[in-house]
Picture (tube, rainbow, N blue to C red):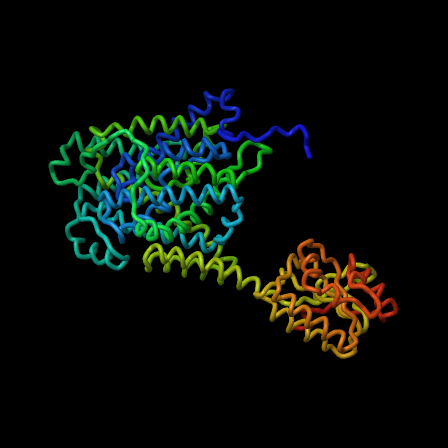
Length: 576
């Protein structure tokens, strides 16, 4: 153990070194506030809340993460990835904008926060790996479609829609002839400003420029009086921390949604922490970051808000602007909190401007480049992308996301079951045994078969392992079979039963059985726990006598006089 290592701070770990870099952090915080202000407004509206609730959620996320998180750059707050999911689910229980809806969202934030704290305390960072990249890509694309479809009425100046994907499309088609050209023009102008600013430099607060410009246009041209939909007046009161009063029935209804949102937050925050780990030589601490996000969601729930999530784009802004600690996020939170009380100006913000910002966010998470790359490299995994998109878009949001997670797990299970038994051969004149390659010269030993199964042995592949091993054992003239086990990390009960059947079949046929390169301590412990080590024992010997450090050691010990059989390389041209 390194005796000189400094102990980890119990709280405010992400503020270490802030005193020496406060000027840089304040500059990064100013830029972050400029980016976050319009984004938090838009996300709050997406969730069915007044704009200033998004500001309070951002402040809660910054305070909670600075308190318990580890990552110096990570920006947490209202997030457009999870907002459509919980908003679509909560509206099935209570109407958006009602006190009951606000109570349920606060309850959801508290439950997600508690689950995130539990994930951090029990070091459940591995759960973040449950979504594969193809499924995650499809999931984000599906959420992008939901965002775009939900904001299309505001962007076009039409009445708001609701219901399923098909309901919303039908409502848009019915009112398509009523498009407000002023709203559409403002929306397109704001979208163009955001896109151009992003292309020029991510540091330019294009969304803030667009939002202020659109609001000034409304005031200067009197567009509100001409029928342009705007946010309208809203009451801003300082947050008073309080726990929502709910019934047991509400708790039960929200529990499944809270679990789902927690998993998504874990996946996105882990990806963000790994992408922006901190200062050189400072590894990411995913579990500690879960604690910070959990604290942020709990504060958001007490403030009457909704769950927080890590934001990769905002985190990138902090890193690119030279931020050195969470002081940047705290500075941004202070500035955003001031903006929350700008209601006299913000009430005139056109809804089309906020819709344009969300359109831009939707386009950013619809990762076309990733889809192209997946398609070019694996058509099977691209099918996962497509199926996930359709599941998230066409099914109720909560069901679609749950199905996406199931698809990811099924894909992982399927990959494990597709492992085949590989035959190993020896390189000519060497002691190295390797998987055979038909275009290279190789050799084997008469009466000896060396095989390998390159996956952990579990109930998922136990039947296949047992069947293919038994087929190998039935090779005519076989005297010794060696299992090259370097890739077998673990053996479960079902696989152990299949393994035992293979060992008994070998002994019944007078075939010696040996295991080489079993490097995993868990797999070695399983051999002993399931009685496989005793089953391996030769007459009058011990099981450990059939465990070897290498295939060459096993063949020299058990088949020292076996005849070498050379196999020439195949000529692919002549073979074709």
